[in-house]
Amino acid sequence: MSNQLSTNVFKHALKQDAPLWGLWLGLPDTSCAEICGGSGFDWVLIDGEHASFDLTGIKYHLQALAPHPTSAIVRAEDGNPTLLKRLLDIGAQSLLVPMVNTAEQAQQVVQSVYYPPMGQRGIGSALARASQWNRIPNYLHQANEEICLLVQVETVEAIENIEAIAAVEGIDGIFIGPSDLSGSMGHIGNPGHPDVVAAIDHAIEVINRAGKAVGILSLNPTQAKGYVEQGVKFIGAGVDTLLLRQGAEGLVKTLKDKDSDTGTQVAAVANVY
Image 1 (cartoon, one colour):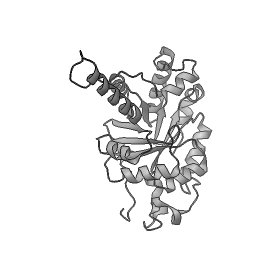
Image 2: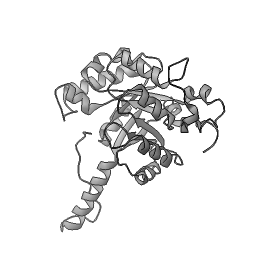
Image 3: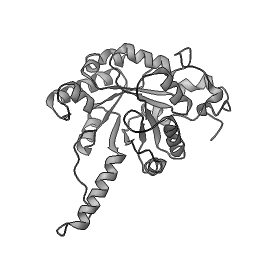
Image 4: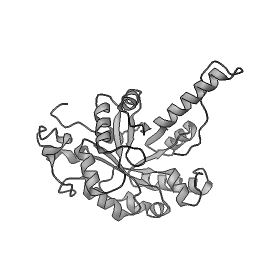
């Protein structure tokens, strides 16, 4: 790695016009990260909330993705300040913090991820991969500029507080979680319910009006492109586990079905993560 602080391409791309397409990573083997990192996605997300990653596994994934043009986002398991500090120290520059329900929680996250004077991130750069163990000159003075902070809204409470959350300084983007939101609204497993759709549409409008980037997960390509028309900036359009499952099942079906076309068949999947 260079002894210069890496530019956060994803952070700067959020300010441009083109949508940013992404893929969820849940498989712990770094070979999968390397394959997906070279597949043309604008970003991939290492899921530290629901997948089986520990801190070392996330670091290995960041290392595997580093040679590729795809940007890496890390979803933390929660907003614990010590956890966020350690994720940043191992080299994450873009963080997604789940279950942010209030402006106060959003402000606490801001305090956790930025160095003073903007925040209160603890300083231990001599031990940090992010600073190349203090090889990067003036790392402490540059790091804040390349951090991209994303918070996830996925409950009724969060939607009720969306204007206040979107107004918090230091947040670059807000990611809407349709699956948990549908559960919170009493429609678990049905993010397409009209009430959930209306809540998502409202959140998109408010976040855009506040000047923040909007993100969402949508495994339906038609729906995903529709979100772009609504002003959604970064869209998670696939999950590595589902791509592997669908590809394997589709190939088996093609081979075993005597009436099947020879082309690859991909099993349909519900738009739920």
